[in-house]
Length: 69
Image (cartoon, rainbow, N blue to C red; front, side, top):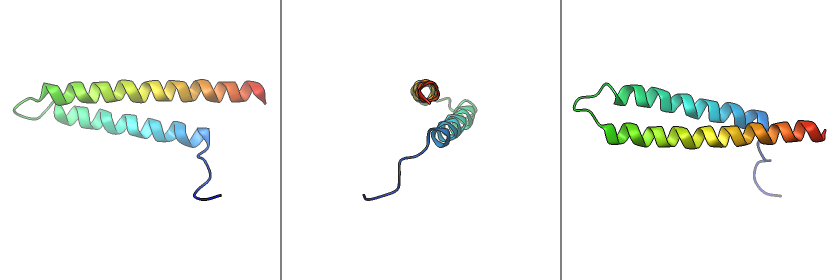
């Protein structure tokens, strides 16, 4: 088998949490720049929504694994 082993679910939850907080920081900076850039803020909003959906699916997957074991 090649490459690293698959990441553990707990690791992925922390990874997605870190990604989400990076977008929070980015969005905060974007809201303070002049001239305003509402398109960029909306794009970060969409990205945050996507990250949240992935994180929710990951939490659901983790719960399913707990029930099986």
